Length: 271
Image (cartoon, rainbow, N blue to C red; front, side):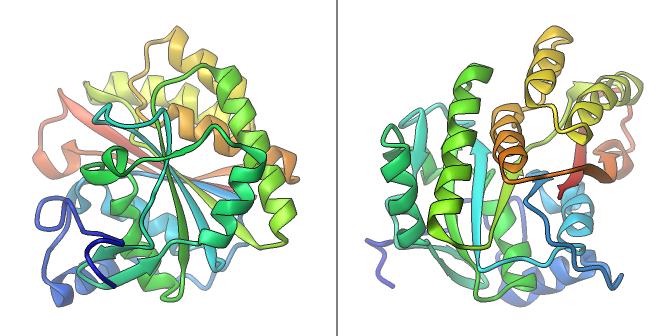
């Protein structure tokens, strides 16, 4: 795969190890052997450095029967590029190799949602999707991805996107998982983060996308991936989701020892 068609890893050596053997070992140490293989419509998975949130992400991915096609929905932290940005690349690279973009599904999606734009700029330095890839590569080596990053938008717009994703999944005839990439409360005390995040997590478990958006806005919860999670919940609901489950919740204080200014992480499944 040439550099012109492959998105290079942007945060290898920062968010996760850059050496292939070290990265594979790191990810596998976080994958639990629990015998579960859930068919999920969606998940919420964090995207911080692996030493902070990797155990939460690993706990979620450990429970999944990951299909061949995975839609990655993440927040656009950089603010660059299109508002709803598809990847123009043929594949994405990590130290573990390349992951092909499912161009066939992407075209089906664009037929029902023509407002999404291909934007290299939106994806160039964004970490929220890249940090999911090593886990996917370890649990489903032949995975194909549909990377989408989103700028902050209204709940109504997230609903339109979620409905379009559900329609595209139906039209494609494929078994598809939607990964909503999000961290939870940022830079508050452990106690404050836990109380705020509890309210958001309850709305996710209840499969209540509008309620999630209301709680996050109403209580000023700094959940960076609220829009991706809202869109995922809408799509999953349209596809017949019946419940959300919290797999694991943690925060950065468990690594740094500083519980006065934590970033919190939640891993959830929707099925």
